[in-house]
Length: 325
Length: 224
Image (cartoon, rainbow over the protein chains, first blue to last red):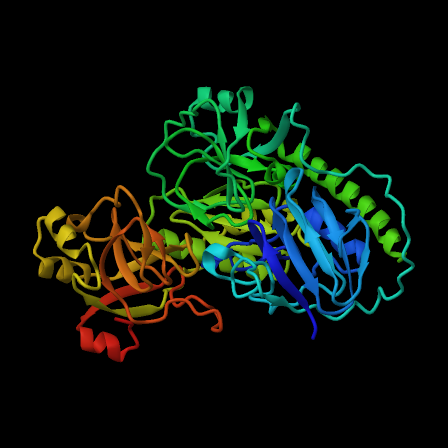
């Protein structure tokens, strides 16, 4: 017997990689880990390339039984982990013997936790990706969230990363996670789409008002609560949406679109939130306060470059834990 | 035509004219020329009614280079738009297969036969694909067939449903929630992941509807 058997699912657990590209024009959304960086971190900890698929665990944990020996790692929203009853740390490679049970508890902060397994979750790729889009019954394991009794195949161990030194220790880099409850998360965005057409008061309110993440947030979008924005626009022709699009529906409460967004929309869009901020927003629980901050395209490019530089540094450090240089 | 930003890795081209088959054809042609100039680096292109949004991979193609190409191509309108394919879609129109048919007839002050005849009376332009995989926005429907969306969307619309909303018509490729008004069902498979491309209808195609009866619907693979 091989693979990973699912013995319990709290809320929603899906197979995710870094998403699909090239099919937006046919109405097929990107999907992919909401906190893609956290998935990459988990993958590096087990010596995987960034492109391999892991499990995305939403809020309420899961239980698994390994049918073969495997190395796993957890990253993202902070959760308690037990392997055969013994507590384990996140952000560490964990060797698990065949037959052992893994129990992932509910997250303490944040929304999305990622589990990587050495070799990756090896469900069949659909249009170049293993990411699950439940709404479209696409990808992952039969296009749906995991259920009790499912068995997930584990891929072959990557050749280049074969030696395991089992280093234990912590990486001295700040972990990105949910912002503290008493702080306001800044969502930096590049203005665009209908930005120039909306009322100037609306543009002004977008950056001066404080909004809160609502309980309706999911992998598609994060609806926000706060002052209503009056765009003065209605009946637009449908057009493309982006990861991070700030949509303003008729009720005036902005919505930030995430990975499983519909590829087109007819609501006014005022701009696009930077990818790193989208991941932080996705991790944020209901009630977390957010503020929008406008940046120029040049500033945005610098910020994206800095974020990537930070991520690369952090990922290389994690790779050391696996013992690969 | 002018361009603006669609986030850090996107550019949005917007046509100055109102939506029409000619605008669609010219945007499509612009998209094809862009692909030719940059066979790598453009990750996705999404056609809207009068927009073309391009997503690129900045590690392969910089925004400045893409903008330079857009400006160069925009200054050269010489190339002729390509005509789309003609696609005929058989439809079983009935109150069984399209539960809003009678209501649509009433809203439009037409008989049920009149609705069917009018829906089949013209060739539609495929303006855009989105909302769901393979869902294609077709238009414009004849003025008398203009109907509002349902106040509350249905939780489940059967696959193949032919629907109307405003001056648009479409076929739902797979079962999904939906707020358009249903007038019939098409037995053809509009979206199949094992085909390349998966979607039967592409933006720029010319689409017509042909009425069929229930027996023919079943013969063509329709599920009653």
